[in-house]
Amino acid sequence: MQASEPVVSLKALSKSFGEFPALRELSLEVVAGEIFALLGPNGAGKTTAMKLLTGMLAPTSGVARIGGFDCFRDRVKTMAITGYQPDEPIFQDHLSGWDLIRFAGDLRGMRPRESRDKGGAIADRLDLTRDLNEYANNYSKGMRKKLAAVLALMHEPRVLILDEPTNGLDPYATRDFHALMREHAARGASVFFSTHLLDQAQRNCHRLGIIHKGNLAAIGTLAELRRETGQHLEDIFFAFTGGNDLEPDTEAGG
Image 1 (cartoon, one colour):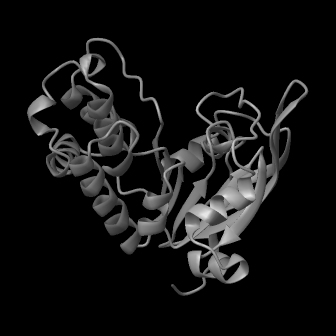
Image 2 (tube, rainbow, N blue to C red; image 1 turned 60 degrees about the horizontal axis):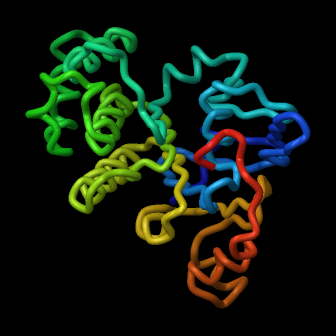
């Protein structure tokens, strides 16, 4: 990958809930066309970082920017160029998958035909098309994750923010989703995803960061981390996270 200006920038980003520091001075950058994975055990602070990036939480200190805009103060502008897939998608009652695709398209300024074509094409890739006439609040977890991926990708955003994106997907859907993610990055988008699944990060990311107790313990390409430690990713992960010695993340999901 060629170096370029960062599209996602976190500088000394911190978030505390009462006396508990969920995230401590997290600093990193993601450039166009890069897939960056934030790894950490459950409760390490991954979901808190995702919510700060999407403007759902205000930082205690520091700043998160997407496309040069402050993620909290300029949330409308940042989310206009961002696609977000939460770990636990929740949809409105009595709306079908197609209803939600049309609604998401309207919010993004897409024409109805464009929403149907682009959303339907992604749904077809994820084997969801036959379920789009059903109420989305009745979907299984895997189906909800697929629909959330459709809504995140259909407007071709500059940035994808994905919180445990394949949690609940079967191996076939996981493979297809990873292919979509890589294709989107190949078109120049930045992809920032969190996971506790080491093999997924190893197969898909250009760089990775390891987070532990809210602190960024390591960052770099897999080759760089291996040169530094001389170990496999699993060994690197355990070395930087200290095994199972964790504090709970008050934002559940880690």
